Length: 268
Image (cartoon, rainbow, N blue to C red; front, side):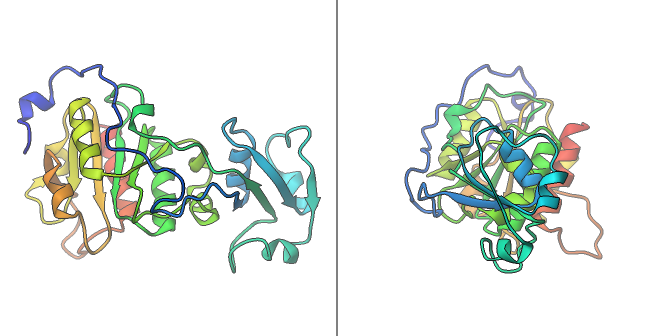
């Protein structure tokens, strides 16, 4: 452990994260180009339509899908009515577009310095080379459900913002800040300085997750499936902990593990 348990349970320091770990710029690493993105699916599109941080360029929809949307389409936004077969040409192959596709500018780039001071009720989720967009989207959905402050990924070895991520996130892409940093280990150092207790999930860890939980703010650190946390990232955690799963199963899918851990943090 980098700090002892008494320190981890002390008063929260009201110190904002400084963002020295850097934020992704331009197209570096994760495919960020600034080009418009196409998102699809009812919940993903509904969330975009009410997000003031989005610049919407175009909306395609079947009449039935548009009629089922909750809320109204912003005034001035033209809708191109289309058949489902036409929409399929606008998205990834076999994507479940549900009759609606939207094209918009990427979300604004965010870094650690954009976060509010550490809050015990709002953990940060740190993903170490989790590259599957379905997993990242599912983790965003759980993060929104359990009021996480943000997810943090390295600019490289993480998926770009995409329709696949947005569909799996079911609207959470517009709710949970997604911070991309250049150096994940340095970002974890900044989280320590800001008062976060950094818990890395590892199946081989001796401590259980419940034993590792402090009363204060938590940064939950998860690695890629199979490979787990990289050595340097694990070294920047205050403690490694395991979830109490049955011996009949070796591990959980990373998105399932995130959901279980976030629930445990919310109900401690």
